[in-house]
Image (cartoon, rainbow, N blue to C red; front, side):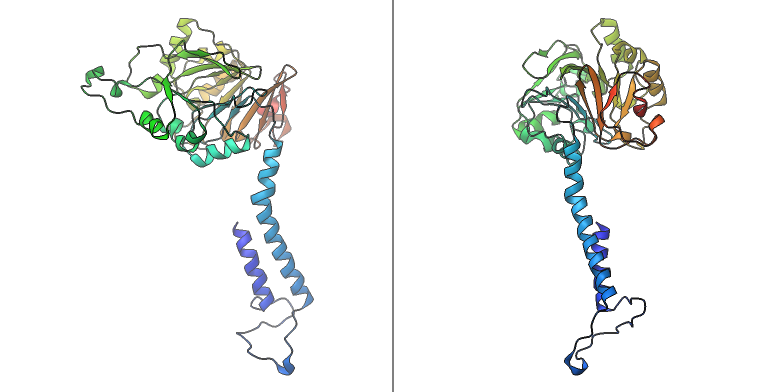
Length: 364
């Protein structure tokens, strides 16, 4: 956009002689009249340079505002089932059954209205059947205002002790800001707990945690853990759960196997690596911001994923990531290329089928 503004100024300076062209004299100030009533002719080379600069400015403007966005959206696979939106340091996961209109579920919103709006527009989402807000942290619910108008209903996590009268020495509970915001926007909601499920046409899901009646003071510990099935893919979404919650899931022996796992807490070290192995997942989505101050994703977690045979797909490297199942194979698509892509160098990840470790070297 800087070039769009600078190039016309250069063209004007050349045309008026304020910026001299090689071999021509510079015009000093304004000339109110000319001899013989003839205006000085602008040299042909200068007129050509002016035309090139103006055309370049128009071309850059059109490319940035029209061509590039349309090209990117046209390249998005139309039959995607799972999308990790790039909302920087936050979570926003889309799930849908490709053949069922208006079946889209959005799990968390991230903290940037602009980023979540861009992701929804890119993947053609105009209506959200269910908005799942896994817990109340800003990086998961901060962009609620951007999606409330197109949301039919919401599912929220149980409250922490602060919002429960009589819990943890709390005499009078504080009003829960998230619920107040949902009520303000007129979005109906219910509180999710372990055992809740939906078998409606479209995305089928089940809540694996937290268990009913559990009262904690840590927002992350209340995170809703979902096992969802869409487009032939099973996805385990771990929100911001930590090691204690992972141990509880493993101890209860609930079904954890999935094709895709949304790695907990942006790849924080606070997790049990045995849970990753128990999923037997092919891909691990790491929703994380570039150069974040938390050091996410932690190298210990990335190593655990490699040891478990899980291919890490990171939004800080790939941008928004879409997955789908085609002829029994999982295909991954991303907005941009990672910094390093194995044997294919800096080739972009485009519809790369997941058959074996060597076949998906561009994502490892």
